[in-house]
Image 1 (cartoon, rainbow, N blue to C red):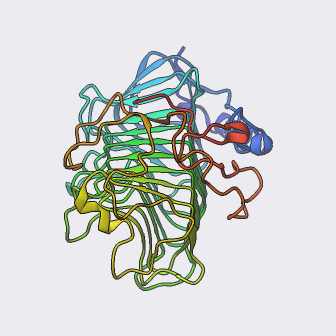
Image 2 (cartoon, rainbow, N blue to C red):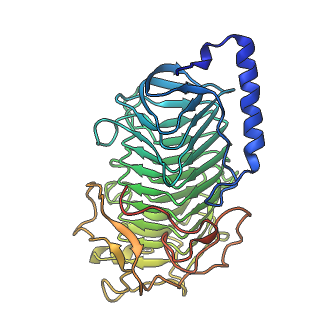
Image 3 (cartoon, rainbow, N blue to C red):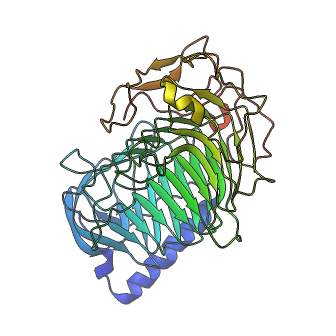
Amino acid sequence: MKLRINHMPATWKTLAGALTVAALVFSACSKNNNGSTNTPKVVATVIGSNTTLSGGAWKGTMLAGQSYTINGDITVLPTDSLTIQAGATINVPGNHAFYVQGVVQSLGTPSQPITFTAPTAQPGQWGGFQCDSAKSVTFFWTKLLWAGGPDSSGGTRQTISVSVPIPVDIEDCWFVGGQDNSIGVYSTSNVRILRNSFYGNGTTDGDCIDFHSGVTGVVAYNVLWGSAGSAIKVYTSATIQNPQTNVMVYNNTCLESGFRRGAQEPGRGVLVDAFSQAKVYNNLLVNNYWSLDVTTTADVTNTKYGYNYFYVTVDSLRQFMYPAGESGKIQSTDIIDSVHLGANNPMFVGYTPPPVPSTRIIPTSYDFHLMPGSPALGKGTTSAISLPAGVPGMSSDIGAYVTDTSGGKGNRHAAGY
């Protein structure tokens, strides 16, 4: 069955729009099995199944378990919604993008993730989700592979880009091989970036998570490996101090970030910069060019951090755990060794660091779970941040993989993607 509801008579389209809005309002307080309180219900309208979608304006539902091919740029108009059901596979064989002016909802599940991919498993094959005038953005259990293809000017595109003040909820997703930022939010959006895995994003630039211009919310239990720039960047503006970006960053595992951008502007595991503030606790920072950088232009007074775990296997990286000349300083609660290279190995289940962690060969077998007896277990704080209702609490373990996964705590992904 194939139904393109953008071809319906006007009266039908009005009714469909009203029903879609009603469904979204009704679902605002529903809860998924990860503790999220923002799971929208699936609208009943069917786009089609096992089909090719030509470019243009589309709305409705991509069906569970079905395959789609995108043969042109897709636009979701301001009054419309695009919903993808669990288990759908969306192939994008050309450099096409999703331009979202309305609502996008990608609602995968642990047993049936959604996959956006390209025929060639190489970075920069398609244009990602450009949500610069969207109403809300929701991605659960979704694999976003090989995005970041060039825009009309030849510049790389972000996998998910948002520049309007809307709810942004991205949980349990995979971002692999993008050419620019994996997630870029440039507005007063409130964000929930929870339990995602990022592998090998960016070319000579590009962060896994990049916030500007008043973003607020929570970044927790993410695994972030091999970003060209920073794994997590918290930034307001170089010139405008308000609205201020203010994000809680806890229990993330950040590895090998910042090498492809070069020594003139190295990337960080976590960067707090440019009139922003953050609460940064319980993060496991391994072999990043610079580990934790609270710059002199950050809101140093209101930025709090501690209980972070630093580990390097390359001697030249030791001095950059807290880079010299910046405001960030070693805290008494940190786990850090500045004398014995390789001390305090966090004991990952499967990780062999390269001699120089700058390559972009994306691993399929790295496993950043912690082995029993890891010195990261039980060394975190559970009370340093006052968290909003409905988000996972802090773990007493450090990093994204923790022993107590109740209440939405802990990354749920197996090794690789």
